[in-house]
Amino acid sequence: MAFLDSIFKSIKKTSKIAAEVKEISEENVDKSASVPPSPVTKSTSYEAVSPAKPSVCYSGTFHNNDEEIEFSFMISGDFVNVKSHAMEIDTAFIYEPEANGTNVKADFNKPYIFTSAGDETVYLLVEEFKETGTVDGLIEIYENRQILFKCKTDYYGETMVLYGMDRGDIWENCGIALVYNKDIEGTPLETKLIKILDEAAETYDENIINW
Image (cartoon, rainbow, N blue to C red; front, side):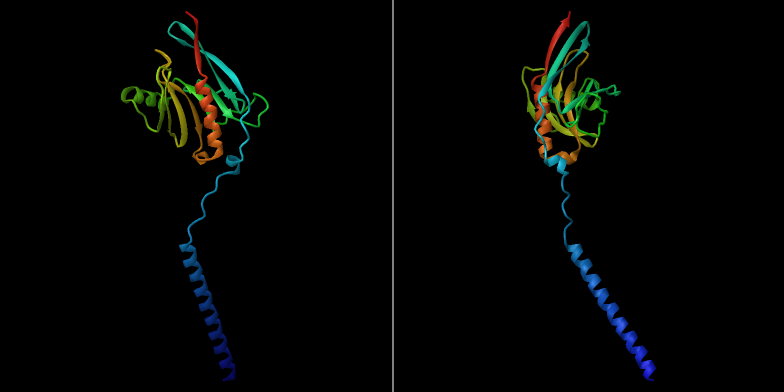
């Protein structure tokens, strides 16, 4: 009998420990359910941003009917001109602040600036503005300039800041735009990138070089 009593006491003690463990586990579950998830922190690379490199002049040409037109604008050395095989992109610049040369891979997962006369989103935004006088994410309207407006909108799941333009009969509904990941929104990096785009748009110029 003493042996059986010992076994029963052992089983009772084990059951009590199991019950206590269960209570503690359930309490922890309740507490964890009541605690809101920690906010997603922005990448430190978006917060610790170096000053923009000095700007350089970029120039190119395009044809409008029988005219050959040279265009130019200033852009920070933080952006490197790359070749894009996309038909809708005329010129592209990838954000590469650490790059020391022009031999840079065209990585469009990084912020980039592009000019376009064939991008569908850009075309439709400019057309909408011309028809209605407004556009999604409108920031500013410009008078008596080839640049018609500035807006901030979605671009295939990313953020685009666009200066909508109309550059002629053939190159109508075009623009110069900055595209970046939505995680960059509200960070010092976004402020830096937009300032660089602003300078490019503000210094944009065209000259007819062939009549």
